[in-house]
Amino acid sequence: MSSSRIADALFGSTAKISVAFADAESCRTVSVKAGDADVQQRLYTPGDCISGQVTIEYAGTKRFEYTGIRLELIGQIELLYDKNSTYEFTSLVRELDGPGELEKHKVYAFEFSEVELAHESYEGINVRLRYFLRTTITRQYGSKVAHEETFCVHTASAEPETNNAIKMEVGIEDCLHIEFEYNKSSYHLRDVVLGKIFFLLVRIRIKHMEVAIIKREQTGMGTPNVANESETIAKFEIMDGAPVRGESIPIRLFLGGFEQLTPTFDNKNGKFSVKYFLNLVLVDEEDRRYFKQQEAVFYRKEL
Image 1 (tube, helix red, strand yellow):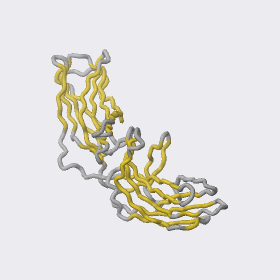
Image 2 (tube, helix red, strand yellow):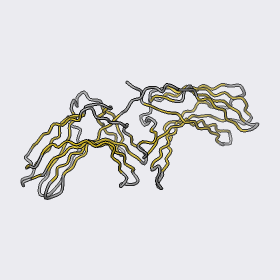
Image 3 (cartoon, one colour):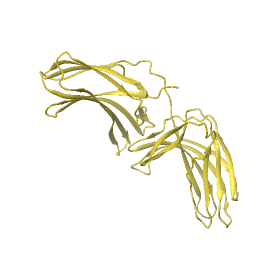
Image 4 (cartoon, one colour):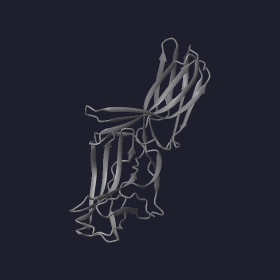
């Protein structure tokens, strides 16, 4: 079954291009946001063979001559606020056909073996990292016909050899003094964040306490158009009511339910980075907020 979008070109005739990946019945797919809708995309990992068929259908009555049919596998980074800022980091080409005349129905098999796929796909606020197959029919006269079929890439990592606990103290002089601890500094995307908060001094009336996961996306590094965006991925209330001195509050955050959580991206190709922070927030009875952020690294666990 083909998961395809149709690219049409009108120059007295119409050509339609569709792409079907191999093993469509048993393949892995992921749900990806596309505007306001969720779409299913084929999922690949580094070193996979990407193969399938390109089908070209022609329903016109006039002659449809072309100078060539090309298939490209492209990986690129797109800055969404600047349409001219597109950077290709992967580009592979297959020439499917030379000069000829389009008949009613043509099918071309394709294969890209052991593709590197160095980076994970990412759909952010200001930046997108995506992979796609682009089929192009070039013509001597008339506009070319092009179709893009996007697929998704996940890259896995081993757990860091050093994964120390996070321990910090925070307070307000003579009013509040707390210690907080998270069990480690790096977490895989299905992990559980464990920790505790210990109140050493409490002289303000705390109403409740929460922990939030904050995503911070930075784009345009090294240019005048640096953009920073922050987004709250999840928020957990871990205490409701006033704590007392000596009280210890446990933290247990399950990460597996948040599909918008991605691995940390550290300066991808010098174009963007994505970092995550655990944000501890205390709110007093006058709705004043006291908070402390600590960076945490997220990674996709090897299968």
